[in-house]
Length: 371
Image (tube, rainbow, N blue to C red; front, side, top):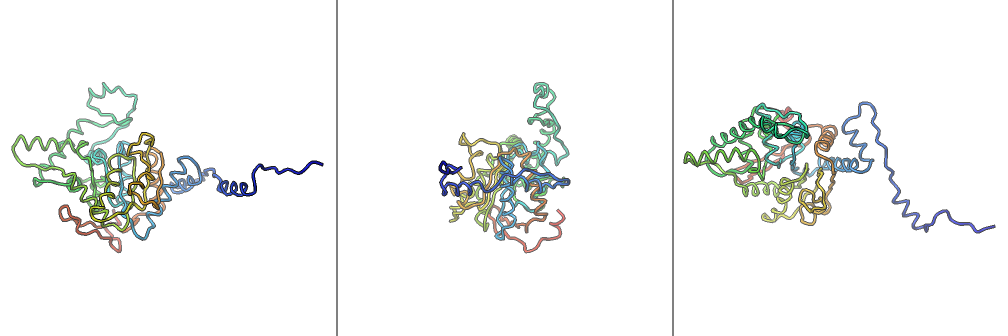
């Protein structure tokens, strides 16, 4: 009779270790009737690949909302988000109290203004005849069209607002707030930020059609030999860093990457000017950028820890999912799980470029509940 042999080639210790690793099974997604967005995202937490990463981002968002220390949440926006149809989603994040500061590319804010002035984005195709579109003054953003003649009108409108201001230097926050005050569309992101006192920064404002409008303003001023306005980019730095310094904690939501992502992170580094060395307590990013080229938009949140931009013990998650898909999922999750108004809204009191006070009301006002 032969000697008994074990069915496993592993030692007892290895078998125990293997059991510990093979502990949590992947679950198949179930979609019963009337599944909510939050229910969908909750189910994705037990899946794999980028579905699980979306679920991890949602978990971090939960902790942001529930933190009794009330972190100041910075929303970084890049990419063709308005063209993609995300205008109302972004506005909902602002109006519902889910974010406190917006840092955006100029193009996103400009296209919000374009729509606020009654103009539209139209469905197109990436297979379009671009030469023919050029003849008709139709601009293409992948599979979306805009009317270039209406862009010209909006450029000039931005310049005319600049014409009406007292000559001098303005931060992008100050100028964008003036633009928002001239809009009447309640669905506008910029108008909503103006009404609620939410700061909006565009660190590369000149790299947008708003910058084109300001260039038109500059040309008119030079031609007519009169003073005009200018955007002071370093004032932006100073203002944003003061928000970081006056916050108990900070958190970041990065939609794509680009200048807004690095700008928000650099405000953390600039905290040393005020004697502060503290990274974000929470951060999520949804992007399709690859990491292998070393670019800032694709740099992982873990990499940012080496710079002190994000705390080494921070709650972080990244999902490599195109934002027109990722942002509705995560915003919808927030809207379901943390109904608006999500948190007490910050009150910013500015005296020029000095943030004199940043307060959190103990209770919501009825006017804010109605936004």
